[in-house]
Image (cartoon, rainbow, N blue to C red; front, side, top):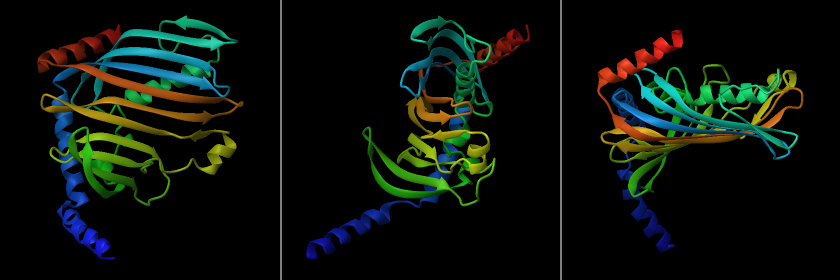
Length: 282
């Protein structure tokens, strides 16, 4: 009994030293905004690996993509520099060399995989391409969540705060928060080092019943590192199962890695983006 009392007494000063979670997340929101602004002076390489497996466990389709990425003030420009894909039908593997390739008139795998790549890694309102609502760290996303400070610990040699988050109880809607998870926040710089999420809400029963669609295990994780004075997401991934109409079932995985970060002159970045835009018009 005396030992328990002593341990409790020793723990109280440590708990008292932890800051309020609202203070932590406020500083994170400010630093997220600063990072977004600083990233526009960098270009980097992004490699994607996308895979779809059938319910039998056999490969349906996979793609390797490599992009040159140029962050802009409020979004991201990227240019495909290499691509390699293959699909399997009746035990035969066939290669293809461009995104969105259809091997038959109706190719759900092609449409879905291309959509996943675009939706999850090329978000129009994100400066790193990753949809902002997946990881609720910016000011506006934080308004939708409740945060709880779980502990202070060490991660990869750095002191971090482990923060748990979940949606505020506002019910299911298109604009509501959909994720729950944990974030490891650097205790010195108040930047995220690692964030993991999973779906906090279930698809409405009417969607599953009328459309025959369900998603299981949907969740993602992202790691961040510092280059110079700027923090970037360096790896991102997730895996989930989908069941759709016509007995369509797939296990999908998405893996992304960012590297070769290079600081560039702002004018050259703008010129690159304008040149890309002109090519799209041709």
